[in-house]
Length: 121
Length: 111
Figure 1 (cartoon, each protein chain N blue to C red):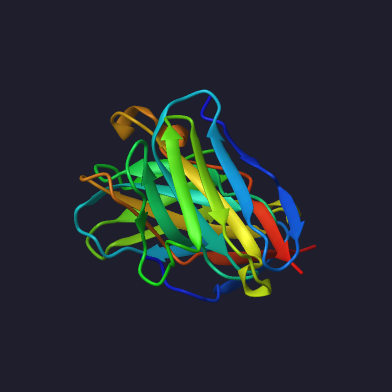
Figure 2 (tube, chains in turn green, brown):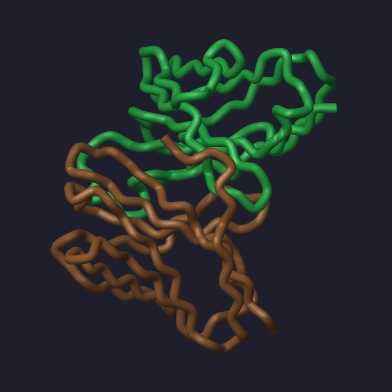
């Protein structure tokens, strides 16, 4: 159980276009989803926390108008990189947390997607 | 929030040797800890967890040690194999269900 699917796994786009990345919890309801950005050989950088039905909470320095996050249902959150530029090229990862106490969850406390590599030309 | 552009510490070990990866945490309210493994180009995967009422937990070839006195967590990998090459990072979860991630360590296994 506790599978998170991320799509697409790799996307190449032209500068100025917008790209949407989906994060789905396949077999559980995710009360909270997180979006991260990762550059090669660097740590995960938390971009925002998204709770179903409410506005996402962005980390300091992350432009909310640039990185639009929608969490319309308990199984789907989307990240849209608007007007993408080459400097937005990165590896974007989502994770999902199921509701309830974590003491009984173990590996299911926080499940990560496989990541989406964005290359902006 | 997370640090921006933080380069990972690296650890190189010979195949067959044991590896020890360390993580320091800062929140005294953290009472649950998880180690994740992230292979290149993939999302992080759960390895092992430990609660704050324990100081040691063993899995298959992995052991996690928790020292609450000095707020230190370590992951020991026995008989390291090439397939263990990855980035490893710890996560601490507070009683308020807040997640905090460590920087991570890049492990390279030399055949």
